[in-house]
Length: 278
Image 1: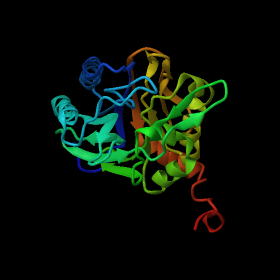
Image 2 (image 1 turned 90 degrees about the horizontal axis):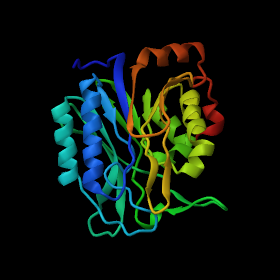
Image 3 (image 1 turned 135 degrees about the horizontal axis):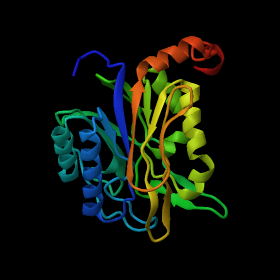
Image 4 (image 1 turned 135 degrees about the vertical axis):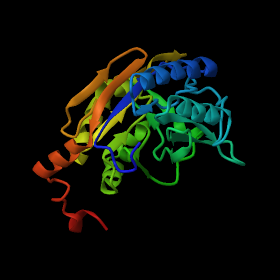
């Protein structure tokens, strides 16, 4: 792979229906990652909680760490497949704490750790007649936003509930990100109302590609995700979509499209930073 940025490359976003059965989940993920890589993907991305998705309210029964068994298995998978690989997220052990980070790891094609992002915004909600979650009961927010510099270009990393905070994505785009990743396990209730609309908005307002691998369906004891793994282009058009069921969304990321759209619609240069920043 050339050291300079590649203008066009293939992405594969994977949709899963994970449960509390870790081995089942990991085997399902591995099968689809291998299939996507064999089809020519340069980067394969998994959804949030790909290895372990417990019913809400149940005790956290799984933790890994950077260098731990799950981490090593994903590193080996990236090296085996010879592609960039975003391990959507997993619960990362925090020393001397009962809480974990919700952590996403990007591996290079040799299985080396290229970047680590820990979810910044935690899903604590109580919607009347809808759903209740309190992620902060078991998860600690990460320390900082992350833009990964790769031969595929600069990639902005985020996870699920981060999607509702547009200032985060403006920050990522402002630091060079041309592709924004949003691995998620969006609830069926909120997803139906907001998931695709928010993703499209992040693409349009930042004039970036958005890649969103998702969890889908029932995960046990009432927990259900919306699915709809999707890729949006910098104009907000749908480049690929899988509504339901485990599978793969593959499409070509054209970084040249970002520059073409930004030349014609230079909204990012028109920002009144003197009024809204500082």
